[in-house]
Amino acid sequence: MPKKKTGQRKKAEKQKARQKELRKGRANRSLADLPCNSIMECDRCQRRQKNRAFCYFCQSIQRLPQCAHCGKVKCMLKTGDCVVKHPGTYTTGLGMVGAICDFCEAWICHGRKCLQTHACTCPLVEATCIECERDVWSHGGRIFRCHYCQNFLCDDDQFEHQASCQVLEQESYKCLSCNRHGQYSCLRCKTCYCEEHVRRKGFKYDNKQKIPCPKCGYDTEETKELSMSTRTHKFGRQQLGADDDDEYEEGAVGYGNSYDDYYDDSDSDEDDDDDEDGDEDESEEEEEVEEEKVK
Image 1 (tube, rainbow, N blue to C red):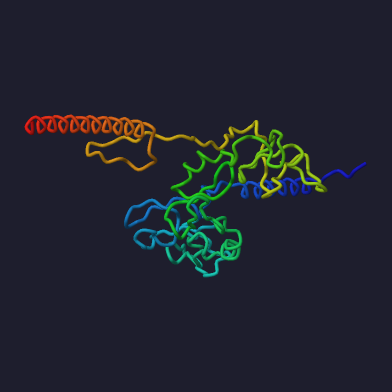
Image 2 (image 1 turned 30 degrees about the horizontal axis):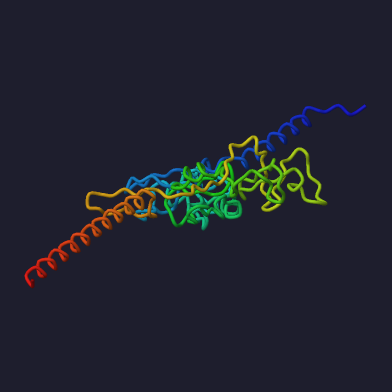
């Protein structure tokens, strides 16, 4: 029979499981909820922006800076891992900070744990917008992730990108390698794969996990569970409208304009023919008058 667990052992196992769940939840936190990507309002210009050491617009220092790792604005540790010791007093402002992160451009407090671990675990290390290719230092807004392809997005392009993210870079739902229906879709490559070509030969897959994309390694999704659409091309010409000053807008020449131009040209040709006929009749009459005079 197995040994009966003591109360101390049960308590240790519960604490171990709880710590594991906390670490798992901390790893799955949303990018918008992290302290390094929180909302900050400047004390001088009153503009809302991402948490940073200096205001992006007026370059002023905030009165109460926030740590980008632990999120605190006041150090209350009388005896702790603070690099700068402050026994018996609480520190705020510049007395609490210890460094500036090179990736998220925010203050780091003078705690030893924050100073040692934030630079390696900063979530904005490769935070470059997939649309405009701007990093954290190039704009003042916050950073987000696309819900479908998990790429970084800036504050200006997040809605526009997510509205057009589920569009395949092909004109049908067929597999990229054959002519069969693509059962799996990669939201990062915007391609479809069938049951055969989505799996690599000689590679063992776990049935409990999603099949990675053979091209980029991102997890694929079943096409039937997504609202995927294909790339479409609308061929033809659009009729261009004319303003009051007869100035046409930019674009290709439309069918309507060419139709009108054709009939305008035909009318002008008929008018020219009529003019020529009239000139010939006048010349004949003049010749007849001259002959009568000669006689």
